[in-house]
Length: 488
Image (cartoon, rainbow, N blue to C red; front, side, top):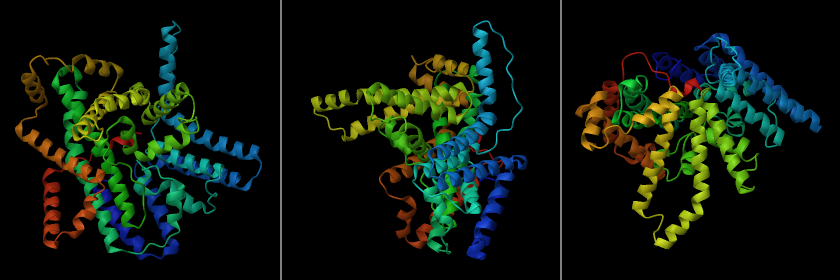
């Protein structure tokens, strides 16, 4: 059941109304049933998987919480981690691993036919396994007590707004909220509804629209060259951001309408001044998860420089692998690791250079330059993320500059090959300007939703009406498109 489907347009209002209509003591049962129904709407055959991950993590956490013996606690932790990662490996990485090993052996003249399985990738498996892992690890560390209520814990794992594509919630934030009694609050419901509206705008008006141009080029690369490849990459940067942050906005808004507070997953990432800052603003729930459960346990930055750089590379390689079972994702993560290492290695030199030149790093021109450089590096890495194969990556790098010696023709011919005329270009620029405005307000800590609270009612309702007209006119009317991160 997609957020951008008619099924969800019926499902969520029903859940919302019934949630506030029934007594508090049975709301968790209702939400748990609704969440499992939401999950089973994709493929009911795989419901056992989320149930098994939930039960194993619940029981092992109870064992850890009840025992004072280190061997027992450690064995339970290893069992929980091994079970969750084992299922994740089997469903998501087995075929990738088998094909990669076979290809490697073939290079040494040891031909082996890969063993491949016809498996269905369970939707959201990477998200809820990481969510349960963080819970068990937190209990093991003593950061929280093991949850005794199996039903509430199962709801924490399967809570439908963030089940499929995050945010990857921490138990310390979400679990206690299921004990709270939520009452209907008009202002809170309206804020949640407005947050969802922004998410739907990002997904339907921007992401799904530019996806047509991106897919046209990246799925038929030999037919394109020059600026078409550059433009498709830039449009993909908008597509993936609006697609994923749009999902997060809808999830956060839907939860907020029922009184729950989910963590913020994006914070104007394309206005970051460095790759390090980008990762503090992009997919925050994953980057903070990797920080707390991979990077810091490896030693973080409190080690020698070579070890610190190794820790960064390992963390970002795992980030790339988490995203997908393909070498393109691994290299995408590796490239971001290289960016981080290079940024750390050159930081002192760059600061000395600024001081020697008497230039403030807060100078507006310097800030703009940093943002543009960071965005350019991120787009360069997106080529690996979007390309279907490593061969496609090589093609983009080999042909992206074709015709650059004639700049005006380079741009005009590239846009023409993609079918982007004046009208389309104006729409892209306008929607891009709206997105930039929303992000600029976020970075300046000016909540666009709260910012409108002080407006006259007539003006606010005029904006609401204009939003509805734009959505009706610009939203696609064909089958709803999947969210990109559903495949992870």
